[in-house]
Amino acid sequence: MGPDGLEVRIRQGEERADVERFTHTLNRLVATLRVIDGAYTASAIRPKWVVAGLSSEGRDLVARVTARPDHRTKRSVQDMLMPVSALVRGVGLLAQEPEVPPFFVESAVTHLLEASQPANGVQEVSLATFNGAVGPPAAVSEAVRTNAAAAVQSGYATWGSVSGVLDIVNLRSKKSLKISVFDPATNRAVSGVISMDQGPEVHRTAREALGSRVLVGGRIYRNHRGQSIRVEVERIEVLGPADAPRLKWGDLLGAAPELLDGRSVDEYLDRVRSA
Image (cartoon, rainbow, N blue to C red; front, side):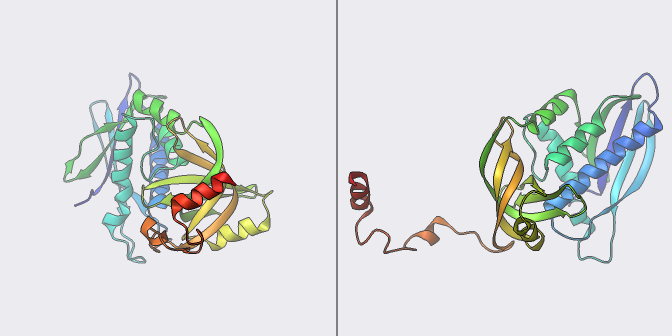
């Protein structure tokens, strides 16, 4: 059984938290949940996050948020609450490693950093799932913030490609087209930017390929762990529907029997090397 929602515990310092800071923290965490949901599913129906409870315990302000049921969609409430579990697990991962967690993209990590900065009476933010009882807390500690900042810091750039499902296209920006490519095999997503300098064919393909499996090529920015975090898109190739099975190595065996001209692999390589 999944969670009923997210519990946000805000530890106050010597002075009480500013109202603006309190609401800013909640707004940035909800923005994180929305980005995670965007990576998780291409569904057009996004959860409406609502307040499930407010209380105070000593110096702690406690807010609970959950997803409102939506009868317009076949998505269950438990499905819409999946980002809650992913967020709490992601904070736990960032406490150990400077890696972008599963279902996160660069902007989700940035939202988390903005939500958790100690300032204006907020000393620390801690997250947990709740479902009757409250799950183990995941504090957004200094170690988490340090690893989160490192996870989205570009260590180097290479030319290459990333593959996955094109599941976010921001059509509102007049400066660039923003996309996200989610790999269901790894549950990780890479954000992408298509500048207006790119030809109309790239923009048209991005719009038409929403929800399809694609190969996106361009300049890839990676963190120091080698994870792709962002790509400046120069080309998009549509590979097929999102649910199309991936080719296996065995599917390629014998695909071009005439390629070696009847020779064995060793004979063919000897001939090539001696040419």
